Length: 432
Image (cartoon, rainbow, N blue to C red; front, side, top):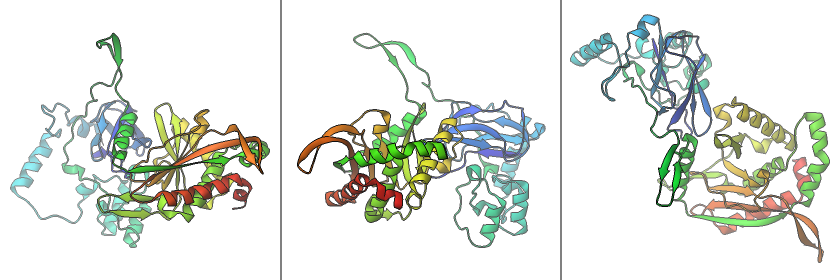
């Protein structure tokens, strides 16, 4: 029998919400079949089963879980049926009598630790063939970092570890001796109607899981001493190039060209010349991490709330490729087929409030531990002065909010000036 756990998937994820159970207790499942969906602040994560067998869930739909929690049991019908969920207290383990007796014997007669036993390996998320490979190579599979779905250890992970190319240790727990507790949904998940305050009827609506995570992150951002740099961009040339090329983009590539790929490209170039904005800050160590990759995070509006998609290696991509990536990621996001690695790993974030159809100016909030965030407003028809003459123009505002512990106003002005120069001459961006 194997224990299915919510493995540590990194990127600061500390909890998730069970949004869907795909089976009923007692159903037969196949190896790698998705048995449940867990929503995190990044994405909805599909949880697979490590083996064929009969399933028994140890969490309910709506439960909040943390990395390391046991989610389900998969084994033979006899193995699964021997487990009962009738624990009398929240701290009582749910395990068969045989396991309890074995645990008692081990405590009374402790034995030296074996290098890696077969029973220990059963707790690791990997196929039997991969576990056998690790045994044959005399490798402690618990020290191998899995690169498969939800941290699953693949054959190439074991081979990489054996060749010395992998040294990081995952935060897997030894589930063979872990407690299995039935997780119940949090209270207050539905609207409370019929309440009143001193002035009349009210309706209390608890925050969704995603809004709770966002609220937690925003509370953390209150500790950052922020400052903002704002400026206006003459966007006449930007509008011109998009209007002239969007039809061919749709005809030749089936891609809707917007201003955003130009904004991403310009911001990436400005970041290369101003590296302290493409960074994160550790207030405990008083240390800045300058990131030498350019993964641009973008806020995307969904029915569940704001989520992030990431354009990886934006500095190496053309306007066309960035536009393609944006189209693909949005389609995956809205069809809920997006992978977690497509929503994490940002080095800098852009929020385009102008794309929502309104908002001339915005004051974005930094997402810790990032050093900065950039927002763009809507492009508006505005009178501008050119060569001493007032003429019709198209103007867009941007705001760069930054951590004043790491960078100062002069650096922000340098970044802003370069960003403005590039977007006012967008034809240059098509040559880079």
